[in-house]
Image (tube, rainbow over all chains, first blue to last red; front, side):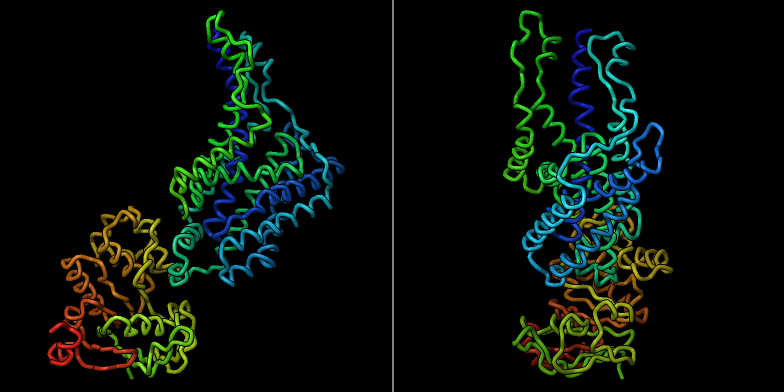
Length: 336
Length: 234
């Protein structure tokens, strides 16, 4: 019985939050990796694109709520994600037209485009502060739990239990759906294959008659949509904080690089590895060990490897280790 | 007038002139081979004909049309196919996907063309689901040629198709190229294996410093003493 209690604790504090956070990172990393593969630069503005999409979603949710819209037990915000996606994609197209297309025509070094993307990041961050302000916004109005820890305890009679939040289930489900759709798109449709061809060998793609403008446009549409979904799901699960998206760049890029930058499957798996590592390292194992170990060996301290404040250090350490040992990442990246 | 007629081409990269009034022509069903020493401008002539190099002077006529100022993509649309010397396949994609990408602009014949290419290169059918980086050099060249054939070109341009493949495969590739030309496609290629290439060529161009030094039938060039001594190693 004690082992079940320990297992329930681990599921409640590591597995479920890890899969949720991992899904959010995976969606972000997929966008980053796609931009890298097709447009050949690291888009530092991706975090702010997530923020931008979420902001639009929140604004429309407020508008909708004032007209009495609701989505029964699900968060109202989900109704407005499609609108937010459209706005975010339009914003991507605007920055593509005014900033990135210039550097592509110049055949600029990727590092220059990267610096331009940092500019876009600050611009977008400023715009967001201007429109919605720097404060936190909570916009989740759905039913909080599918089943709570108490439900679980009552049902099983265990001392410990785990719960599943609606937003956690939504995040994991949506991510799986979006990722599978993306992989299907890239591997089975003509447009998807032409994106892979363009990423693999740009000159030959042009010789084969693939339209570069269309490839670039489709890439931004996908990146903008993924960013909006990632941001909204993160905001629903935790809270919308305009400042958090700068910090999220680190785990997102770590995930993309760990998986092999430019490789979508790598980005997807990298997201989960980063998230689970953060939680495994910062979780306090005192209670788990209390159940597993004999009574006289039960620890007094928190049994925590690293304080939660240092969770970003975990992705940083993983990033450094990957860059030293295997810079191409798990799935040898660079092309999609 | 020949099917492809590139006359008096003058051009190069930046200030340096590589092509000096170079003239190349080829007819349907013919194989024309450009040979010459290193740095003679053979590949540059190919790039110029395909529109990847801006000419300072000269005219390129293809199928009775002046294509001197067209972009490479537009030339593909008119029926020119090009197999570059390097990076001529999509490495991370499968054989089948490579062929599909070759026929990107040509939706209706795609399945028929893939069947034709598989009957021309049967080994590719066996390897159709493998990615290109799992294939041998010769097989990759077959994919490269196959990809260019997917657009139903009337002129196929090959830049050193046999570079870096084994002698047995060279022989096989030349055989396939003859087979392609017998279908009425004009073939223009640059070759290092000059003797073997001239043996199958209807027409040979010997370039030296961007100029035509000798132009004759392939078999005549092979018999020409001066050409043999200077360019074919005796």
